[in-house]
Length: 475
Image (cartoon, rainbow, N blue to C red; front, side):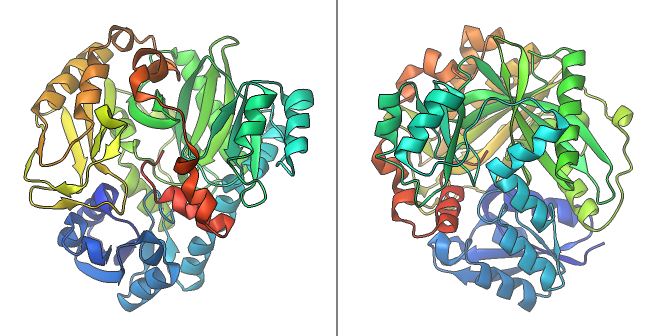
C-alpha cells in the first residue's frame, strides 16, 4: 500500500480523498494556489505544497508544478480527483514514468475513452447500441451534408475530446447548424454530432475494474435533472428501471468497459430513449464522479478506497452477486450561485455555515464559516446525500436537510433544490432530460457566444479542454 498520496485537486473532492487516505493510514499531500492557502483541504492534509498563482492554468492545471510538488514531497501516488487534469493522459503518463502510481485508469485507456469518436468505434464490435453519429467535422458543408444524409435532425454537437456536458449545442435544422458553426471553431476544436434523443433519461452505471480483467457494476444513477447538460441532482436507483432492466444496462456497461480494457473505477453513461426503450451508449468517464456518494449510500462500498486499493495492485474481491442495493439515495449539488439571477457566481466570504445532520444525511464539503468562495474556480461548495428506505422517504429527508442547511454571506442554489423537491412531477418520478426546461423554464436561457469564451480564446485543443474542465460544473 502507498505511504503518501498527493491530491492534485482542491475543494470538496480533495477533502473527500484526504479523509479516505487517513482512514487507510496513508499520508496526504495537498497542493494549493496562492488563493487557496487557507483552504480546508490544506488544513486537513499532512503536508501541503504551493503550486502557483490563483489562475488555474498556472496552478491546478500546471503539470510541471504538480510534478515538482509530487517529487519534492516524495509522494508515491497521485490522485487527480475530478475535473482539472483528471482526464489528462499525458499527466497520468508523466506520473507513472516518474516512478509514482496514478490512481485511476491507465494513460492509454484515458486517451481511448477521452476521444469520443474512438470510444464509439470501440463499442461497435461488441454490439453496444448507440445513436447515429457523424465522423469528426472538417468543414461547414461537411457538417451540413452529414446532418442531412447520415444522422438526421435534431442533432447534438459535442467536442470529440472532453466531457461533462460542456460545449454541447443542439441544432433542429440546417439553419440552426449553420448558426452554431459561426460560434464554434471546428478548426480549433474537433467536433462531431449525434442524433439528439429528445425524450430520454440520462442513466449512468458505476463500474469497478481491477488490473486483472475482473469487472463488476455497482448499479445505476439517474442524472436526468440537468440545466444546459449540467447535472443538478442525482439519485440511485432510477425509478425507471426494473431489476431486469438494471441487469441489462449493467451488463452493457461491463461489456463497454471490457471493450477498452478498462481498469480502476469509472462511469459508463447512457441515454434511455423513452420512445424505443433502448439504452444508447454516450461515453465513459475515466475518473471519480461528483455524484459517487449516491452509489456509496445504496451499496455501502467506499469508491475512493476502492480506487486506491486497485491502483496499489490489489485484486477486486467482490463478485457481481455480492453487490446488494439498499434503500434510495438522492444527491443535491450546492453551488455558490444565484439561481434567480441567471446562476451568477456568488463569490465572497462565508459568514455562517450550518450543515444539516442526522443519521441518514451526509454532507461532503470543502468550506466552513470564515472561508471565502473564490471567483477563480468552480462554485461547488457542498453535496448533500441522503438515503431513505424508499424514494418517497429520501425526498422527505432531503427536504428536511435543505431546510436545515444555512449558508450566510453568499447566494446558493439551495432554494432551487427546495423547489425541485416540492415539484409534483419530480415527486412522482415523471422526469426526463427536459424536466428543468419544461417545469423550471426561467432557469434555462440560450447559450451565448460569450459563454463559449474558453474555446475561443484558448490556443490549443488541450488548453480548451482544460479550460472546460476548470469551469463551473463537473459531471
